[in-house]
Length: 136
Figure (cartoon, rainbow, N blue to C red):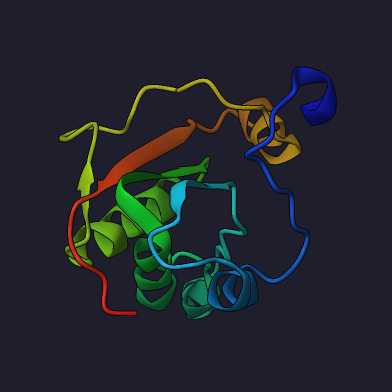
């Protein structure tokens, strides 16, 4: 589909995200980062394993160009709240839909989202714009 649409500025990499950010992405070179439906690790004792944590957010911020965006989506409300807290605490981002979760923006529907909807979960999209200076 990418080839047929003539999109030349898109790369798809199936690899560990942290390693890709560290070794393959130049600082301030990305227009946006999407993290859709990461594993919520629902048990409290496993929350430390959740993907969206301060070190990853700092790495992402360092790779985003000024004004770049970070789009997160989950069907787990407490994870959405944690993601909002972690990204906001970084000082590198401003939330684009302040005071409430962003309206469902145009994006592909994942199998995890479909499952969440089938189970009656609300979908939470959070969209942030890079504003600060990252140290990583």
